[in-house]
Length: 374
Image 1: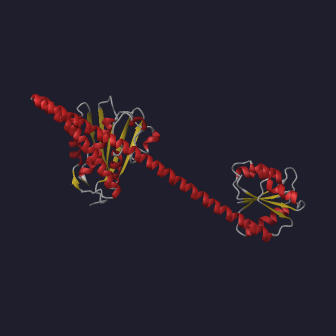
Image 2 (image 1 turned 180 degrees about the horizontal axis):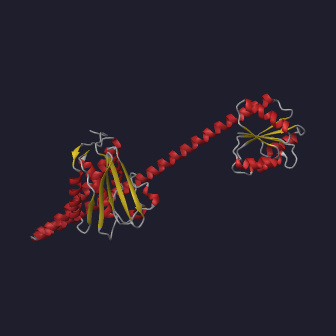
Image 3 (image 1 turned 120 degrees about the vertical axis):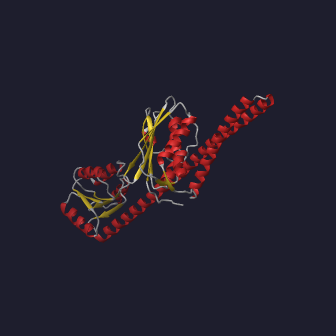
């Protein structure tokens, strides 16, 4: 938009009409004071400013405008009938003007200058947009590189921990075998097996990440009873966490068409997280329900919870909640893999959480899903 500032009404009207005939949006002000008020409220590409005005003259207005951060980049063209000397023109440029036109105004020249300034404005705006996009891309790539480095560090530590434990148990086994202490041998074998199972889970997660990234995560969909699957999962989780009481409510009155193994993977992830991030508690709730043509499964714990500003990121790849990263182990990819599995079933995942009181992770999928049917 263009602002014309002139204390002579005839000049305002004639300039406004000419510019509007050439499809420019035009605003007017009849004094310097009025112009400053409008500059504070509106954004202008160009200001055509008369020099000789009562009160504030054009130079004073230009100097004031240059002090506004919002308008300091606005182009100013001075108009003057009396002061056409070099010293006045120089003053115009030093006041913040980019051009100086003498009266009577040659409309063809004025239009040429206005079009030129508009073209410069559009080019500058595009350059700013490109610069902003490039900066965002750079920030994203730096951020991505930092996340990758953090993940490599975490993964190295997480993989090394069970390997070190297994090595220790093997050494203990050698001593126990030599002594013929069979009960101790069995106990060390069981603990070594637990560490190997953990290592296998970590490797499986890493392989799933690779498959997701390459688009090779496959699904074997079939009809199955989700109620039976949930009961089986609860029994298995309870055996390894006997101190936790896992209660299930709700039921699914018909079979679900999905990849049973992958849905089990998601529910197990939700349950193990619920137990992991709820130290000092002994209760987890699972609820299942049907809403229209979709089935909803939720897992609620009463643990540490998640800050509101962090909840939107928990399903991102490699994301680990800052308050918990030091206290709890993990690669930060379980929820990301779960979200991808559900998404490729045509479903959605989410979380409701109150910091310090607990979290409820949930997902929904169609009862009959034809998405990603391999």
